[in-house]
Length: 174
Image (tube, rainbow, N blue to C red; front, side):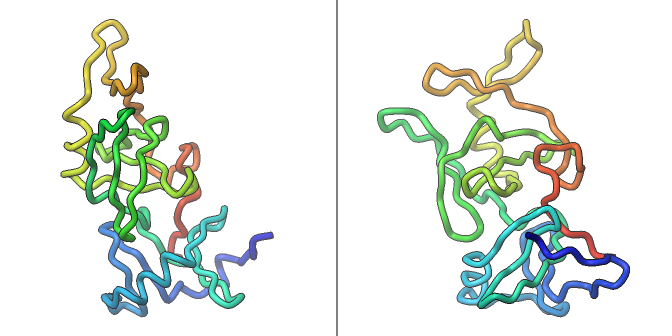
């Protein structure tokens, strides 16, 4: 069961992640890769927001947009077609096109880590995917066609919008 905190009494989180995926502790950027790797390993998301849980201690984060960024994308054709995406935590996974959407401001997002958390596409990887998009005049929509299956490019809302399927993804600072 998540720990409920009264937002009026909750202190500002000591750890912040900005919209560019940079991590900060008490206002200073965290640049040590071993610390960031530890944080990614212990990162969780619940209805309260992102948090780290290490040795039984839970610390919620102040996340401006998303923790994960898609830094690269490549279409592979090894038996079946799939996009492999590179994330800012150093991992690589297949893009689940059913979660790929363009949010307000034309910002592309998808769900990663088993569909549990949103990731924002940087410009280059978005173009690496979008170059394969086709347009259906009858449906008036763009789509990606992989393995004979059509994936419409959905228009959605930003992760901070509670009505979005990518909702409840960050904790706002008071």
